[in-house]
Length: 86
Image (cartoon, rainbow, N blue to C red; front, side, top):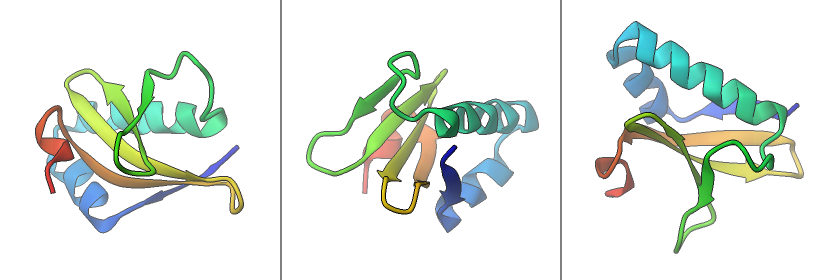
């Protein structure tokens, strides 16, 4: 199982959103950590960066996978569309 690490922005977003939505997103991230390369995870590689996105309803989780340290780094969590803006 991969270790999960959250950026400060991702943690702030989780704390500000409704508790039931945050719980669902955390559950999906934990399922992703069990097998990040499973085909049924609703994951896509992002173009132009070495990251992936996980779709959870109308929310998106942008993350990177480090196979050397066996970790998933959650970079950003946000509503679809605006999560990809820098």
